[in-house]
Image 1 (tube, rainbow, N blue to C red):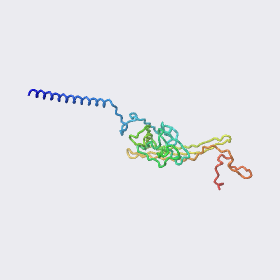
Image 2: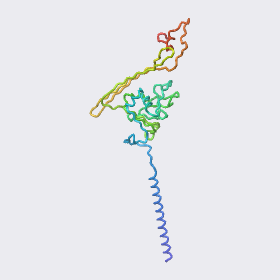
Image 3: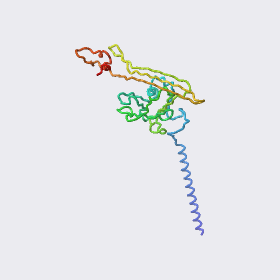
Image 4: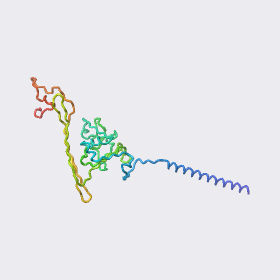
Length: 277
């Protein structure tokens, strides 16, 4: 009887010892996991926080006011951004179908449709033109930035890094946010004219073509105590330009060797309407 009680007491003590050891090991594992969590760094790749300033953001954001944009002297928004925004490229292609008119622009060397364009923080629709003929962004359909009048722009914000975590795959190259004027008073009118002047050596005359006329303006009106209405518009007319060299060969052959008067002009390849057959 005494032997059985002794064995029973020994087994009970051994079981209690194993339970205490298991609990101790579990506490050690929990403390190790807590230390690992405290030492690890959590990086947030996307956020929808609206109260973050440009100094607090983790990506480069450039803000260009209208005063800085007008100092460039450019007449198109694509040209203005190319002169002010780093890594923004605007290629003026020629003989490329509709791309001559709706010219694509790229950010950080990626495709034109991989740059998200916002107008007052709202998505701007893309054009229906698909870039072809080996142009920049072949096969893509991007936003026509030049369709936004420069007179209506108040400032431009450019995020020069990928923002696909927040905006989607169309913001892989970055985001361009165009903010319009919000004026309740004042206004302005601007007119610009330019042309290409080419000196023809050895002939004592110049060649002028590619004349461009641009007229833009805006006006602000007050609506009630805190409302506003800003109206802006732009007119632009651009003539064609030929940058090819002149052909000195005889273009018009007349019977009897009589010189054709059109041979004495620099644009002798152009037939006057009255003499067209």
